[in-house]
Amino acid sequence: MNLMPSRSELKVEAAPVANPAIPMIEIDHVSQVFQTSSHQDHLALSDISLTINDGAFVSILGPSGCGKSTLLYIVGGFVNPTQGVARMKGSPITGPGPDRGPVFQEFALFPWKSVLGNVMYGPRQQGVKAAEAEAQGRALIEMVGLKGFEHFYPKELSGGMKQRVALARTLAYHPEVLLMDEPFGALDAHTRTRLQNDLLNIWERDRKTVLFVTHSVDEAVFLSDRVVMMSRSPGRIKQIIDIDLPRPRRRTELLLDPRYQKYVVDIERMFDDAGDAELQP
Amino acid sequence: MTLRALIARLAPFLACLGLLAVWQVAALVLNNDSFPTALDSIRAIPSILGDKESLVNILASLRRMAVGFAVAVVVSIPLGLIMGRSRGVASFFNPLLMVIYPVPKAALMPIIMLWLGVGDLSKTLVIFLGVSLPVIYHSFEGAKAVEEKMLWSGAAMGLSALERLIRVVLPAALPDILTGCRTGLVLALITMVTSEMIARQSGAGNILFNALDMGQYDTVYAMIIIVGAMGICLDAAFERMRERLVRWSEPQFDIPLSFS
Image (cartoon, rainbow over all chains, first blue to last red):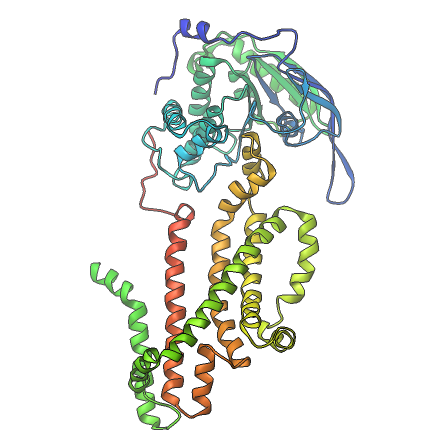
């Protein structure tokens, strides 16, 4: 599967920002308190502020329990922050909407729908005609490398294939922001690598804004323009690192690139110093 | 292999034949007036089904059963689903259902008869009560088990809370709901016969017990066969429909899982 677009194609398709002064996503002094089972307050997120620009690929990296997924759910509108506000293009986020498309680690496909049915679901909901939704759906399924599996049910697919369907299903309704919650966390190393490559290839076509939650340093550096490092108890932003590596990125080339290696080592050291031992290399 | 498959397919019929054979032999050995042979009982079936009055009675039973079952399903599925998705609704209804659940519905029949008489309404109501609880319970469990992320995915596509209930929770919980309905269907038949035993006025249960009172034992056994056959046919038909509707949830091993 070769999804690499040519360089010129990238330039043509790079969407202009409507108003560059307003960032795509703005997280403004957000805190989140959860009640534990023993009725105690647990501060999951403490005073998080973060700005994500249009077209940026931003990873949130941290050990488990640092609240990174919660932060993504707040941007998705699935969880309301206890304090502070998240904004999308300047307006406060009050609930989920098709402008922000989630991709979950658990895939969350509709098991009673075929691959094609899943991918067509969002567009159909938005009133796209069946024939048109199907044509677009088939194209997307081909793009994620699942041509020939259109009429399979999720039950019949492997984990990697399910996540490809989930990605296609979300891309189908053209969200402006992709919210990816450890999407490759449940997959084996080989499948994971392939999906990372494919995701980058797809992303490099239209450069959607991506918020990508992960606990893998490697994955964050490979994919992102910026890595937001978080620490836990309470969840805070530890540091933000810009990843200045050329695109399109090729995994095999990048692994040999000393700049890439330095980013990975630096980030791992920073987590080591803080004693966040659970972080995966 | 094909012979094996054939035997597997025919197994239920073979089981029926086996039971009838055992019955036949036992009846011949015991040679008791109140225990007619299987053949005698089967011979009595055409005369029951050929009798207009009996047929009207049996059809009336089936009508009550269908109405009771249908109303129960229509009421119970939404209630169960809402209970499964709303803690408040669940904590309101759960204690109530916990009290009603273990009470044999037929035991309520005398009270219902006092209030509503011995007609169709009482009998249909008992059937309704018998069917609702398993359907509510299974719908509730099914709705509770729906992955939150699946609902979030629906919400992100712009589905409202009601749309999510109908278009995500309902299909996702369908395998559980249909399990409940299958139990409900058998219970409908049971409560149907029981209610007619208690409120003796019309119906299949009434024919059965009238025949017993009059010592027409072959008719008694023939009625048992008829009611049993009705149950088996209804269950088989339902199971067919169920398989068709939830094929997506059954594991399928014959499809290659390889990719690339």
